[in-house]
Amino acid sequence: MVPVFDSNRKPLMPTKASRAESWIKSKKATPFWSKGVFCVRLNKKPSARNVQPIAVGIDPGSKREGFTVKSRSHTYLNVLTNAVTWVKMGIKHRRQARRVRRYRNCPCRKNKENRKRGGIPPSTKARWGAKLRIVDWLIKVFPISGFEVEDVRAKTKGKRRWDVNFSPLEVGKQWFYSELKTRGILVLKRGYETKALRDALGLKKSKSKLADKFECHNVDSWVLANDMVGGHSKPDNTTLVKLVPMQFHRRQLHVFQPSEGGERRPYGGTRSLGFKRGSLVRHPKYGLCYVGGSAAGKISLHDFKTFKRLTTRAEASDLEFLAYCSWRREGVCANSSHD
Image (cartoon, rainbow, N blue to C red; front, side, top):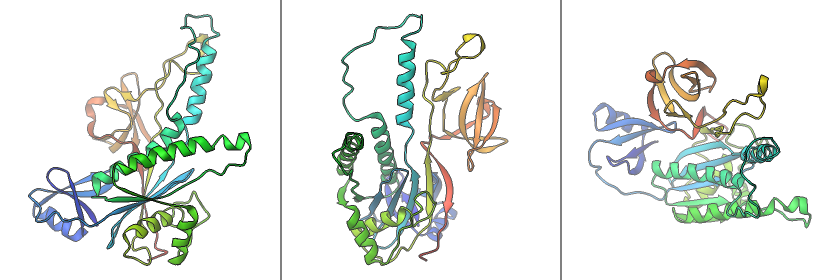
């Protein structure tokens, strides 16, 4: 099934691939890609705008997470993504570097005491914000009406070092739920309820949490979406689109370790000679590439499929900008165990 948009980029009900192909051949539609998903945009007014209920099932996880977009008739998309886990360590290193600089024999501002950060911790906000960005992308591609999420909960034991993880999880998920309620209907299921739904359909979940398989996380996301809209007794589509969030090295004052002579060169940033890092561009020699860092007036490029670095000497004038990217796609994983 191919996502369909009208001329104003408003999502309509998806169509069959054969019909989309005939539309493209007859110039009734224009093909394009959205974050690795093939779509078509109609060049004329659609004959109807009727939409069926489409649900998104979400299975959060500490390392991997699953998303499924499904209606009563079809499973349109299964997304497997990595969780954002590196922000906490980055904040820790930034704090250490800031404290070390205060003991150097160089000018620095006075420490501001008794400052309350407030809000959601950065690592928690980044983890749940990544989920929300995927949801916002799915809303742009499909006419989604509701969400069903497995409600993760932290178990308290009355021990300080254990219970310290309770508050960030609760604060983060409550913020995420409040944002989902502004985008559609929200239904929450506890873990044992998800298991009961899975067992009722005779489905099994794999214990290999880090494997690129439908049975790891997407079996639960599919069960949740199917519970909301119904229509199937077993998965009709187990193909996965794997998305990996890009890790950007934010601008620092300088590198942590000085070079010979005590010199500290600048480090980090999210721009490379006018291009946002992670952007998808086209190069006359290397084809589709991601923009990496820059040095000496040249840009490094990374392969679209493997993300391996192709060159560090690309000219900015040779690059054709295509799209901004927050994730990179690691291909499509086909799984036929339920077919």
